[in-house]
Length: 494
Image (cartoon, rainbow, N blue to C red; front, side):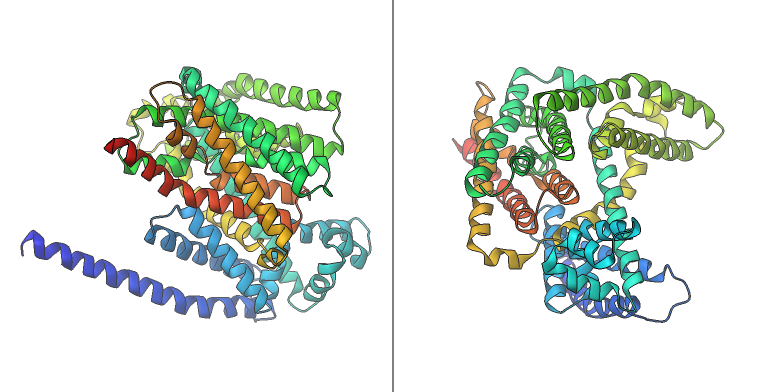
């Protein structure tokens, strides 16, 4: 058989595989959701952990479907998982799924449980945590026969998603070396500074004008979320176009490294102000001082901690040692970041920047190791991170867009997010495609979702504002690949 007949045959087999995958995916979806509902509402099982297994497996299954659909249409995986979460969250809500309703309420349900355990009456705790609108429905669900199992599964899903975010930021840190941070040029630094400051300023004033009834603390958090950048989507486009070694790619990727640091510091400052309850100059300097102190201690003491703990596990296999030390180090720094009043992801990112394979020289040269740290940690991220994106999608309440004000709010924030990053491209200096650099900085992706999820857990963002920010993330993630390809192809032809 010659090559011409082989290629159509391969495409045909590939098409049949896709058709079967979608077909079986639909069938399993129909079977799986009622099965989860049955297990959580009194289905007989000997092991109390069985509902947890079924619930988490169901969410992972839908994450795989979302990822497949996204790649089928040449879109980022994160977008497919997020939209799948939006779909099952709202379809489940319309069908009256108790499991989905509990997941949709997010951290508020766990706040209610905490208030109840602290001695507050259940009904009052529900109203305080959920508001009078949703309290009655959640109380009815949790008071039913499947209530304890629902709470157990929802809490497990929430914990898994938080682990996923920690490992995601850890892996981003692993790809960020201090040497590269010092070597990025002035163009990258200028793009990063403007790319954080302009969306922050525009986002703050957009929030002020569109939502004057909200507090300044909320405006600050919304502005900080708009300052985030997800470089993974842009990097994928540049790689597809074989432009990873172009000036634009170097400027964008260099700016993204600085952007991550600035965004996390800004998140730490804003979160600290919100936890403190008000903003004043002394409190602001205190938060900045704590953030800088934490990073200084982490980068100074971290290597000593690593060498000490690695010496203790020298009798282990290299894979065991790398897995154990990596997990221990990222969790310790995440915990210390939280202790310092910062987000746990700041500690996770710092752990990734500090840790590298050279610390494990006892087992031979790093390049001779069978697996690097990233190879060993990536499977954890592959399993846990999709749970986070699905959960974020589930918590997007489409009914909130029935209010025209919410749509206007989402549009204004999206416009501020795009314009702020677009302006940053003009700081790239001579010889670079300014428009391409600006577009490359636009996607918020997973980083924007992490910021929004923290705002939800801090009870800064209500359902309408959270949904608006997620819509902003979806739009900026969707428009970037096409716009960037078009801009670079036009430049190549000219």
